[in-house]
Length: 311
Image 1 (cartoon, rainbow, N blue to C red):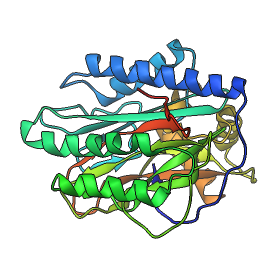
Image 2 (spheres, helix red, strand yellow; image 1 turned 60 degrees about the vertical axis):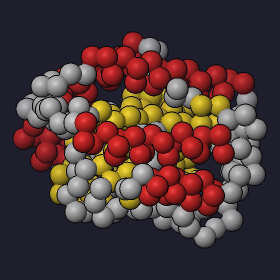
Image 3 (cartoon, rainbow, N blue to C red; image 1 turned 30 degrees about the vertical axis):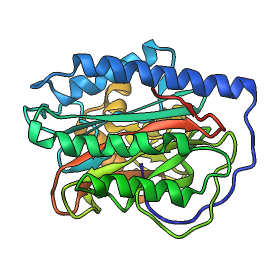
């Protein structure tokens, strides 16, 4: 998911058979984990147990996580992944967004769905899914992106809710989870046309609130930016450790587990790395009014018969 701006450009590279196969394998991993996770996720489970099981399952299906699994509850829209010792549970009536990303050699598939046992929230949950289903077949070469966005908005508003206007879907390039083009969830004026073999994530968010998100101060997901000098020895260890992710997002708990580093030392080191511009942050995003948010997402290869990677 990407915060919305309207800076679009064209992509002229077409994929060969090996790249296509990597995208398809990544999509199969995400699809399998999405389906199986719906079976094992139960109320009163710890979010951290859900996250670790999902990330392990991705690897069991021959891929690697392309991003820490996002498990965003209720008014949280995105970028929440539990801490290693997080005590948060998925309670009865909670609206849980499960956003799963996998890659094969950097070629990424991204998918998400929403769970909620509260029958009063079913229509909101369905709104984002209906919007996603409505536009998948529109993802063809020459399709006007503004029409896809307008359809997402039309469907969600037709269900009585608002799309999140400052979150977007996004392109998926090698080792780049948030590539061009951005795919707004609201109508806009623009002439951007989809091109054959672009890979995009369509990602509608629906809410019963104001339809905008804001950053919080909570950050559990980061990505490497550039090498800059740091004094903290733990920070240096983290720099070496996160190179394996090739610039893609990673979780604080991955560092704590991988380096056997306690939470206090990790936070001190991360603070220095952020201050010195070595890593980027992904603040947890919440609906501006504090209202419920639902989310559904598929990754698609743009073709005359669109290839849905995450069924």
